[in-house]
Image (cartoon, rainbow, N blue to C red; front, side, top):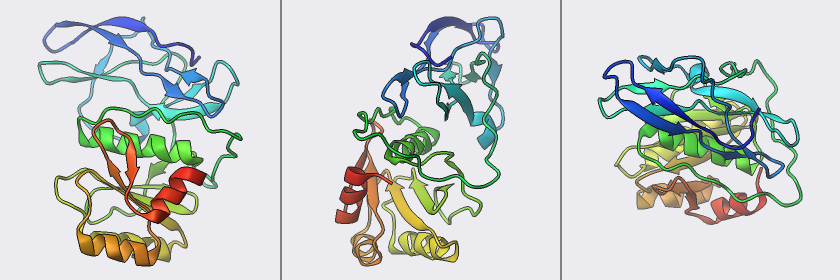
Length: 234
């Protein structure tokens, strides 16, 4: 499982259009590329309702055997249907019961491989992949939904992903910090549209790393504490 990416023919069950889908490749902590093994014998299914557990699959690295969670392969048809591609031998990743934490990082981290951001879900995926690259594992949906955007969590960390076109406000930053304080956790903010000046000043005072997600899916540090996190990892 988890070898080189493969391409499969896909027919949309709604409009019968034919597509060729190539599985994405993600970086394992050992540096090897990991790609979900597609199940050619099972038909794709249309995504009607989103569920966090169904959006991720557990895939083993063919080189080191490490098992990690990656976004479930999906294809958007031109008719508007979103198709979920079946993965061979990899059931949807279950939400961890307890105890997720930072992963021991290798001496030299492999390069970060982003995913292009076209939708709000892509922004969440990009942030989750980046957090895993920093050294966190078992990234999950946060228990408490933030006032805006989407919350992610790992042991000792809360992250907020804001895919809106509005710059994050002072209130957004303070709400994240207060929620993290109640859970004795650190926090980090990802925004597509940047930050209001007051939000940046407050984040500097509170020590909150701020990142802007560019459309390539690469988080760009906005303040010094974000620079440090990017350089040193979790």
